[in-house]
Length: 295
Image (cartoon, rainbow, N blue to C red):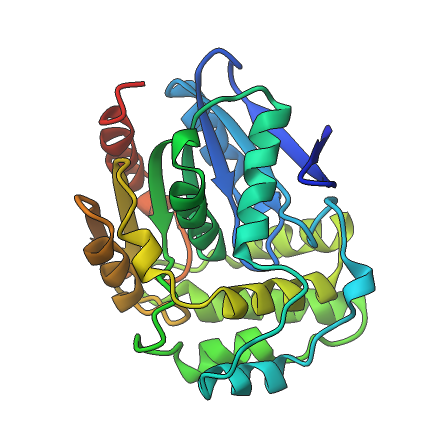
């Protein structure tokens, strides 16, 4: 797969479809590599008339790693965040948003439809207010505003964020499958075979835990984005699961209430995942929102 020089780092990326079609940039979430965007989903979007771009965020997958920053003490920093203390981080979501725009620059794309999931949704939001001239439409999936007054993750989901990773390939893969099971929610069947294949592929492609920790710190350090989000003017779709244990649905509702004119789609039973059963509903809503951009 190709690499691009962007924002003084290297970004690994992959494209689907005709470069002359409407650009669609997909941004994945915390510690997740671009292969978390299901390839079949990417192909379907390409067949629907989009030039689909998925990529590895900094510090994950095959993009640039920030080893010199060291591995943060997540428990200590999370406690500081809960107390409202300032969080020091090697980079923030602003930097990660600039990475994504730098990738568009490298691909000679002036404007794109921007779609992000979880932390990727946060990055997509930042792009929309930090680089508004580069955005045709915004889709924020199972994400939030950084509002500290919103409900916290459920205890079992919070443990997913902070629990140390075991040693050894087999143990790491078992733990990874269990993490996906916990955040999947109970409204749709959990496909353990597919989850295991994804976790195995991710491990074999790039097993790199420190980047996950630094990305989590970046989300904490960026803080409450509500004021900035209220400036977004592009067509915006907010998608959230009613059964999301990691990012409670209030996060999606707060996002939709903050961004003027945005549409909110709450999918009953969906957790912190995008199971194939919801794809038709998600695609329909996405197409409708993208069409509002007129491009």
